Length: 120
Image (cartoon, rainbow, N blue to C red; front, top):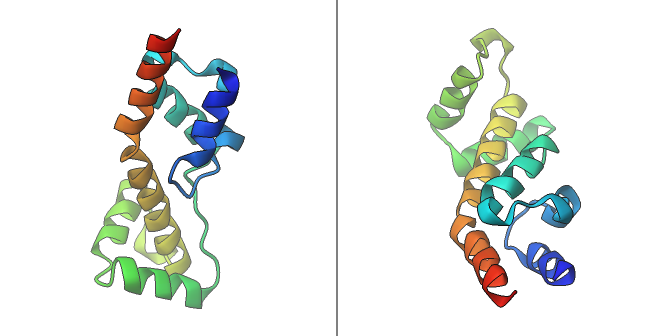
């Protein structure tokens, strides 16, 4: 069963290296998604750092040209305007996007673990 879980985690369609951040032996099979999410979060797996001005500007131009979403995230985290730059805004937005993309896997993850329990 452990190998089946490892393969499943490796094949998830996500930018996060789930198999590296998740301790398979500590997954709560009754609450699999939340358990996996928490392990990734505890390991800072959702944190994306975009460095260099050009990369940050490119990311923002493609994903938040008005900067409204990234500024809203910065506000949620308590940033003050004078402490912001394109790299921080891009990193905050990229981190949120990775987190949101992972949330889209919730049904897939929970279904896998439900089926796994039924097989036992």
